[in-house]
Length: 120
Image (cartoon, rainbow, N blue to C red; front, side, top):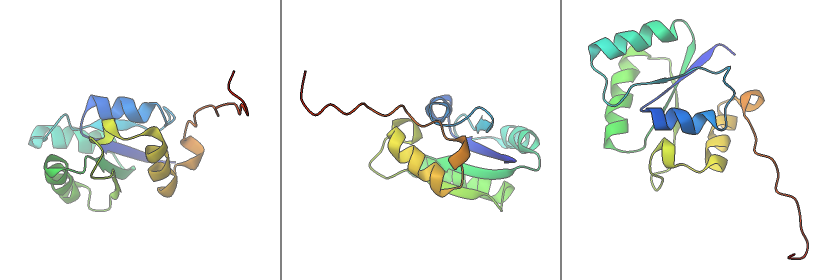
């Protein structure tokens, strides 16, 4: 899969690293990017399909708008409004969003909790 995901910050990137294979590159804007940072992202992404996974707040919307101009064919992934950004999104919800986007084979699923019919 020749794709790249762009997130806002290193905590967002760390959060995705818990549920996504390192084969999928994740790049950070480190907040609202200036023209130099946008150019760096553009070069780093190259010809990959871009997925924008930004916070569902005013800052994330502003950054999404800026990156939409640079990556007009980008796919958009969203967190719910009630979550504190990508870094505060529960892993289960991140996994659901990544599955919807077609990343199924690259998701690192958590080990299932063993079933215990009675408390110990």
